[in-house]
Length: 268
Length: 308
Figure (cartoon, rainbow over the protein chains, first blue to last red):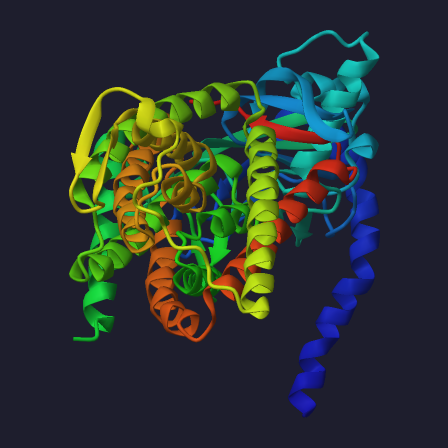
């Protein structure tokens, strides 16, 4: 009991002294070049396999800030934004119109390169971290995404664009998380991204940006691969590469089951 | 826990739910002696399966139930093979046209609408006719009159057509044009709606071709095996819309449910069965119609580009 109290004394001292030390150190660090900090990051998994029991996956983006000036956690010197981007695919958005009492799909708009998955995670709201111009340049945020159409003047265009974003957000294929990046200690951070069940397959890029005073001081890039695996991969490949054989397989399977059912239940 | 990922539909569904759906539809189809596709495909669409995948996978499920059905009828000698092959010849043509039509509609984003509209029209008309017919039959039975039997000497305009052929099992000598046309129509419906087409083929064979009723049902089911098999292969080849992982629980449920349905059906009178079936057909038509006329909660939808 006595021993513990003795051990705690230096710790209390340190806590009291820490703010004072930080204050005295501050002028020194400002003289050093701002580009010294470096962000390093990685992803918990490089490969997400879609198998028959797949109901979505959680990936963890983690990293650290080397040569961090920050003395205490949550000091607010640095901001981190992580952007996860899935493969681009052309998609069509259609709007239903009422024709003779029934709702039919009207003419649609094609977006040539909409990301199949897109998530922005940040330590604070992105608008508080950097200016709109900086965010736009880096392609951060749903409102600044480039979908491969540039007819912004058309008001209908905006309606289709926001409808697409809304629909993708509902399916969790587009995500914006204002406090998705959590700092642990003074230089470690982590961010969890939930990939929904309907994630497209392909190569995903993960960009991690380190901000200080509204400017990017360092960034790092990683990637992960989402693939169908096991029986799912075999069937998918068969269905698209050897479609005829796949069709015959489906029929053979059904016919065999029908035959087995008749045999099992026959009454003679 | 029972979630399973569908490789083609790219969504996750509950296996138990699909097994239950297959069993319920199998039970009803066994009870009424129909393929059950007209129930299965709309139910799949209502549970979130994309329409084109529901159609192709629905057709695949009917292959299984019609194989068991045909074997049962075959043992009783109720299958007219020659008539079956003429119907299949027409069915192949109809199936090819239907599959290509669906591919075209998918490219312009109207597949779901056209499938729903065709369902409403066909099921509405067939259901109303069946209800009318069975109500009259029930009234006649109540009045104590015998149901008119087939008069073998009776002739209609069908008998004036050329290319006549002898069908010994059905005791018929008629033109091959009407069965071919019926086959084409059924092939079209099968590929477009994911149904076997029994609900249209059976009345056509009874009233137009004047085939004996017991042989009509066996021959119809026999023909449905081939038409739905062809439709399945064509959809898989041209539209890549067959999901075997989805088909599997549906097939198992369908085969088991079908056997119990047949037993349950034997306890009901024929005209009562027809009236019940008519009400169910009308119910499905109404359900699909409601989805078409009620303002959707979201006017916008994402349509993936075909082949991307």
